[in-house]
Length: 378
Image (cartoon, rainbow, N blue to C red; front, side):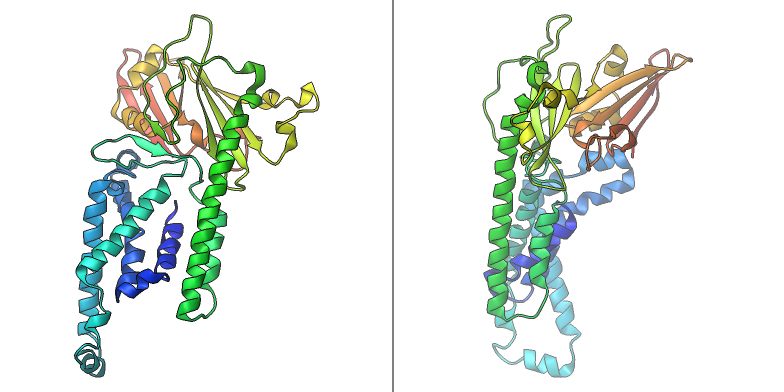
């Protein structure tokens, strides 16, 4: 999720019963709700370092403890400095026995409150198609539910509207409770729509959908990657590796279906409210006639390029890496990988070649196999 959403969720929690924990609660929630994204400092090392560390240890068990204690320490220290700089009259009032101390959240309480903010941040990243590495640094695997886009405009509206206007403490808590209920309903709707989109996915590809490369894996509601490469199909044939449904920004009912084949990706957008996807009226309306195909051919040059550091980082991050290669007149081979989760832009697949995939890697190899260039294109 984006940081605006994380901040608004922290502000909403600060309007619940958690506010009774004492002074400093709101600051701790706002700070901890964004703390895991401190990994943005990796950008200083370039795009490769960013992909290598983004949603890594700061979103895992170690990050939960370290960031919670750090946020509590910052709020605790900031509150003490603020109190020391107050005017003489306020200081005398605060020095009255039982006046201010009882309203200050203890350090342990601030740690507990910060843990809620950090944990909720990681859990809100989990349902996005981007995913997160919940067990990092003990495991660098990515996990995702594919329910939510990175930015959910409907969730943002739900979070923003209650912040306007004056209200009593009781009214603020009531608004916060309503917001949390609406958030849960939004997640529930997205989850149900995702399940329905996956259920309809085979119909979209119709007779063009090949058989599975391997036996179906044990059913799991959470996706994880990198995955073990599938068994190669028979010569001259292709097979299906997996089907996935990616959420859209515009509507919880619009999904992008990605069919990963042994030698390509086939992509189709679906609107669950459009009856044509359920019962096409004629052969010309058949959904599989509108499928877009992206090649994914692993030649020896691609295999060589995959051993470079940048490619290894990208392939560890990318859930659906599509590889293609080309040789120029000087016998230099250019290998390019793109993550199919972000292919075609956010609006639709009508003009996929004009949209920019923000996650693409380019590796250039000399005729002797030497690496000439490796970089992430943004």
